[in-house]
Length: 167
Image (tube, rainbow, N blue to C red; front, side):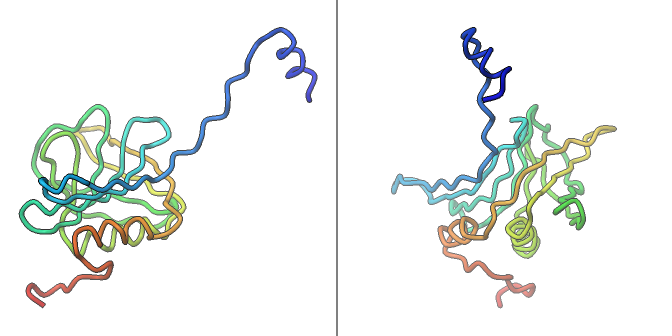
């Protein structure tokens, strides 16, 4: 035991425990009276944002990627959001801003984004808000297992959807 740690322990001073790294969590609705939904999500280490892959089945099954920062992003027109993987490869796509955060529900884009998140060690999301860039940084999940469960909850295959409607 290092001398400083021993001295602090003898004096009754407790050192703060190391913060656990954020981890992805999976949740699924269990109320049969409600439309089925499921999500895989993670909170940024600073606690100021969440990245969510979510299935909703209220109208029709849809999987979306959502970025929810604190403070919330006000509702507004769609705009370009950047997702950067491993500080190297970036994907830019149009997201919707219904209030509170941003989401992308375009099936092909969502699959590409989710597949890249699954393969990445780090993911950074950047959203322009006026002159400021709102960002969140997250560790990758280490596999696509939770995302496969989200897609399965929607009754959708975890695969690139057809780019041609109805096929």
